[in-house]
Length: 157
View (spheres, rainbow, N blue to C red):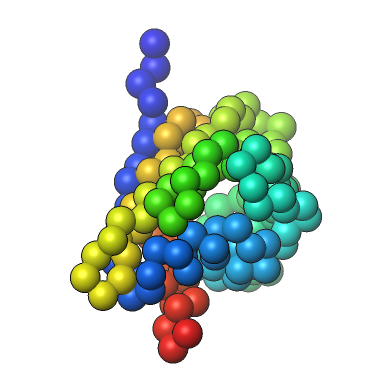
């Protein structure tokens, strides 16, 4: 049996848990903060409720040549569902990348926990069952960038 491939990334965000939780349930917000680094997010479908489905593409910039996309040269398209929602505490996404390459197949679970902290919220994102084609270091860096984007969404807001 192959052990589960996982990463964990945490970050303090100077915003209350309620506001951060709502940012996970709003398609426009997710399209803004979820794409790591220089990628752009496009939401195709989004039902922000437990059991609700979503579909999204992360698009690499035209000048990005470091790695190919999972779906096509410049796109990582994925779909999933809100597997579990605990208001203001926990968001669990079950996601699958659209790829013909079996190294990128399988359901990856992204569980985000929102914990109260002095002056804001500690946000911890755990990715489990990461497909073998995704380097763990890349997944960790992408999650870190995503949490930085999420934090930036609350600056001055």
